[in-house]
Amino acid sequence: MVGMAPPMASMGQKGPEIPKIEQIVDYKNLPCPIPYEELHREAIMSLKPELFEGMRFDFNKPLNPKFFLSHSVFMGPTEIPSQSTETIKIPTAHYEFGANFVDPKLMLIGRLNGGRLNARVKWDLSDNLILKCNAQLTNEPHMSHGVATFDYKGRDYRTQLQLGNDGLVGANYIQSVTPHLSLGGEVFWAGQHRKSGVGYAARYSTDKTVATGQVASTGMVLLSYVQKASEKVSLATEFMYNYSSNDVTASVGYDCIFRRSRVRGKIDSNGCAAAFLEERLNPGLTFILSAEVRF
Image 1 (cartoon, rainbow, N blue to C red):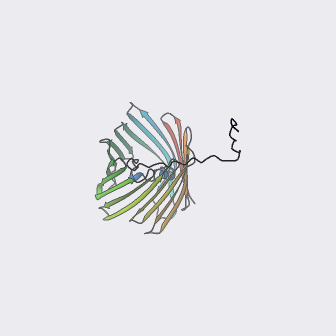
Image 2 (cartoon, rainbow, N blue to C red):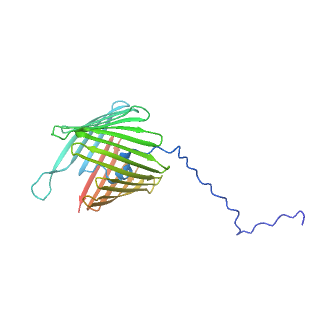
Image 3 (cartoon, rainbow, N blue to C red):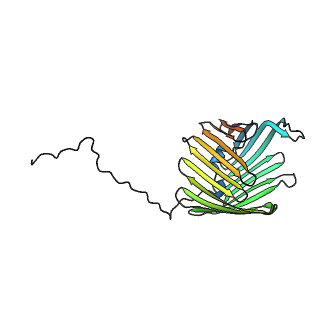
């Protein structure tokens, strides 16, 4: 009848479906990938912290906004050479002094420990070119070494050139092919050992997961996967295989960040379990406790 409202749709009846709008990928505006040498950095943070046996206190003393001194005291056992199969450890203590200069375009870090000097330099030569240098100087023969790396960052790619003592030359390149996937490769020549090699890698990363695969002509195959369970908890796993020596190692680990502390640990197929605790006691003062057990 005229003037009557149209009948209402039944309660169970579904309305017309709204078509999903597919996200268009702009392949001319892909993100810049991370450096090739840092492909596994999330897994390394969980599985390979600076493990040692004992405890350490780190104290940083700022002198101005860009320059500060660091003092580290280490206490723990140290293995000594022995002709028997039994491991011999003696209690030791070490002191390490450091000087640090940190600027938005220049970073200088130096560490002195028992006659051994470790130095790091990171210098932004331009917005796209970075120079990185690492060196270790010691009185022991043939133990001093240094490496300089030129890192060029493009719009959606990154390339590096490495030069080191003893005839070390290396180069790598990594390219973003999608917003989450990047592919790369490397070549190197070790003049002292007369060895050369090539390698290939792939990395897939999202906000919650990172999966990386790497293979090299030296016989190494390395796979890693990291899952962020929350903003402060990450779980990681790694599989390493050397098809030249048939060595296989699998590892699982975790990384938990709390308000004033951080706990990391791992266990691998070789029967090694390790834990690493960092506790901020006061501003500038950090307590570190590390342990590694083989069973």
